[in-house]
Image 1 (cartoon, rainbow, N blue to C red):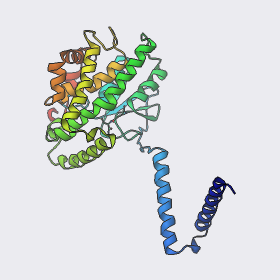
Image 2: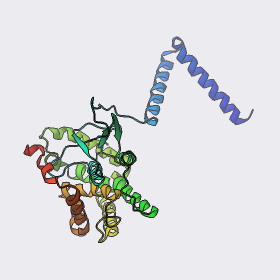
Image 3: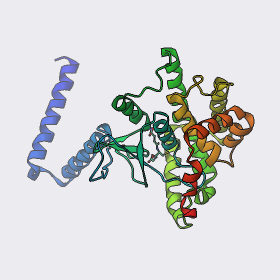
Image 4: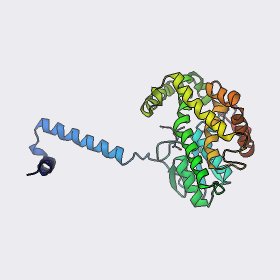
Length: 305
Ligand SMILES: N[C@@H](CCC(=O)N[C@@H](CS)C(=O)NCC(=O)O)C(=O)O
């Protein structure tokens, strides 16, 4: 018998034995029962992580067909949305002229994250996938003037800011400037105990991502290179890809707006405002064009109500 045939026969025999034990648990010794239970747990955990963890989402009982219900964190004094992906999606909705109803709260979408939307009674998560969905649904294409090469560059910048630069922002906000979160989030002091446990999870996430393994200087150097790359590519253009805004501007503004207006005491803010003033001007340009209600929204923050 060949070696591989021997392995196959051995595996089949083990499978048969497992099925026999599971279908006739009376035959199990205590040790075998523990082993079977542990294996079942392990298989369950693997299936759970392979099949994707879908968050259970509570949907509205009633909705207007074709209307976008936008779920994100509520405005605070500093900024209309304290998540860069929320700023991105809301800016895209405004650029594409798609009406929406904000649903401020802390509820998580189907992927366990914010922002997310409800549309025709269904929950959709991930800002990038939501934009693709709405482009199809509403017949929108902010990138229609771009060549295929331009689209490739846009994709690269979008992924750089969201998969790399974003983590510099997270580390700065949650680890280095944690003590400022109470004021930024406008929450009572005791909520800081809860946020401290979130901080622990953020630390684990940064470590698992890999970016959390850099010391402060290395990390700041990496993020500085990202910001300077955006600044150089933008140059004197009004928007990243030229005279008119495209999808990548929503993504980049999403991240930079947090740096400009909600991370003011940081090296990130210094780079954007002092070292790369064209980035600050770019953010002001998008804010002035699409966020005429900025002051109104941010004044509505809890402290001022
Ligand atoms: N790829 C997602 C990222 C969204 C995201 O990471 N949101 C953060 C807030 S900035 C979140 O909900 N984090 C909660 C968590 O990871 O548990 C998107 O584009 O929407």
